[in-house]
Amino acid sequence: MARVALRSRRSFSYSTASESSALAFAPRIGEADPTGAPKPRLLDRVRAAIRARHYSRRTEKAYVAWIRRYIFFHDRRHPADMGAPEVTRFLSSLAVDGKVAASTQNQALSALLFLYGEVLQVDLPWMDEIVRAKRPQRLPVVLTRDEVRAVLRRLEGTPRLMAFLLYGAGLRLLECCHLRVQDVDFGTNHIVVRSGKGDRDRVTMLPAVVKPRHVSLGSPFSGIPQMPRQRPK
Image (cartoon, rainbow, N blue to C red; front, side, top):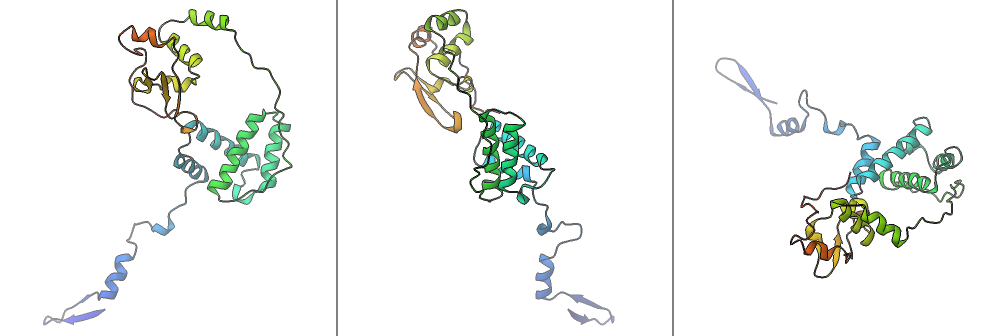
C-alpha cells in the first residue's frame, strides 16, 4: 500500500496493481461464494440425466419413483453407500413380498442400473442371486375379422377414423393422437410416425379403407387437426 502526503498534512492511500487484482477476485460482502454452491439433489440429477438423453416423461416419472422407493426400502440410505447386495435384496423383495409381474421387476432393475451407471458412475457386478418374478405363459386374445368389423361399424366420426388407423396401420394410441396431415402420404400409401416409442421415427402402411373415404371428401384426413407437435407427458 503506497501513501501520498499533501500540503494539508492529510494523506490518502491507494491500492497497488497486485492488491487491485486480488480484490477483484475476492467475494464481495453479501455475495455467495461460487465454490460453496450446494450440489443438486440426487433425484434432480436423475431427472437431468434422463432429460439429457431425451427419454419420455413417463420413463422419467417411473425411474424417479423406483429410485425413491429403493432409498426408502433401505431406511433412506444414500445409493452411493450401497451396491449390488442392496439392489439384489430390493429386487428380490419385489418378487417375493410384492409379487410383482416380471415386467415391473425389470422396470425397477432398469431404473437402478440407470442410477448407478449414468448418474453415480458406478458399475454394478452381474447379480445372479436376484429372485426373478415368473413371467406367465398366456395366449393372446385375438378378435376374428367379423368381430373387428362389428366393432368398427358401431364407431362414427373421428373415433372411427382412429380405430381404422390403430387396426390397419398398427399405430399406438399416442402415435395416432399425434398424427398430422403432413405425416400421411397418399401417393406412396404410407404414414410417417414421428417420435414414436424410443423417440424413433418409422414408416408404416396406410390402410386402403381410409384412402378412398377421405379423398372423396376433398379434404384428406379432415378428421386429423393440424397442431404443433408436443412431447407426450
